[in-house]
Length: 513
Image 1 (tube, rainbow, N blue to C red):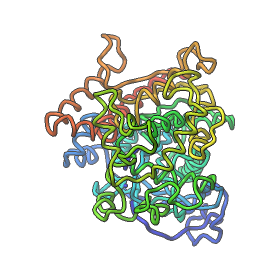
Image 2: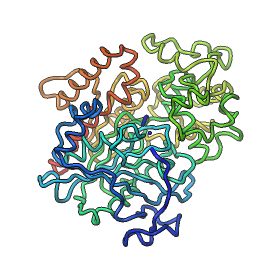
Image 3: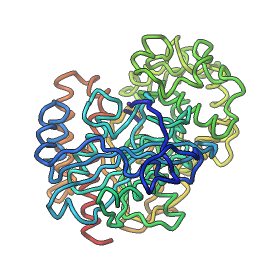
Image 4: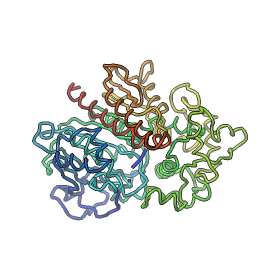
């Protein structure tokens, strides 16, 4: 869950969008209405120029090495559209619209659309349409999408989400599956309105993907589109927190992942906005030092490092190092399995974010109404009727309530310290595989662990696994195992899952499924 963009302003008319221009007289216009048509262009480069730009920086060279030389030029536009917040309130949001350009057959004519959800980012200025300056929040994510997908023939629609960039929403509906899927669909609707004015055509082949938070968003969007009878050709979510209810159990039992002090306030604020029952006052959730400002802290106007330096957010201590009640010392922090104990220990300290009262109430409800996966596998599903409001919210946004009807690739890495692979991707694999009653049709589900060894000469992901192994080894040699672990979720895994997704999409399109 990870990324960063610019608070700007000015809304342009939905009623006059087709004519292009004017101020928006209706801030509560129809969902998916494009606010400016044609949308402003933020970047354009031919295939050779894009290759040269990527070659000019270390980050770009790494992208180029994984994604391959650009086949197409890329043109990027910033679209703005009407959508809704977590309570259904009218708001606006923005997205990057990336178009392949060139005379080659792969770059012209009707093109498939990739609708992509990005990972968690703490900065409100996050904007994937501004890819020329890698110092800007969201630029690296946008450039990676341009290099991997748009430069290889895919139209890319990459929402920044409500609450980011020029959005008026004062919070972000983080992992609120209903809202985030609406936001994605609204961005797609707006992008399709923009295509004719930009001399681009949609082939009707819709593909979904996303990383970390965006993996959850992509699956939630596929669920929503399937329920509406809209055809998705294939999807490839990556490293997402899909089994949210079970993941929450593990965290409160002490298996604290990296990044928890960022994810938690985003999640609590979003669920408080969506459901209104997580707390009456913030100090019911947060430690006294942090409670007064936590409801409006994230997404922030300043970088995360500034929040840490100002003492407005702890770096890693989610919970107190003092047990919330007698008998819970063994999970404050856990010491098993030994290999993960140092990771879990980072999540505890005297200067902690979540109060012991909140942790104890959660654990007491979990003991009374157990989860079906954590601490022990029983049903493989969330608790049927949790009583704690956070457990209720996590269950409401857990994705174990449907069965995909289209080809699906779940990608990630087994050693992920941020979104635990086995507890999310592994749980979904079991849920959607025989003999589960929710098993997908044979041949539709593929699962890729990029950190696994090559299985043989016929392994379709051999190149991806080999490339990841070399990248991980390089990070370890340069900064040591701790550095490689820190980079694992947000830097090392995504480029190779993106590459695997592109190959997967290419095969599905070629098969005509």
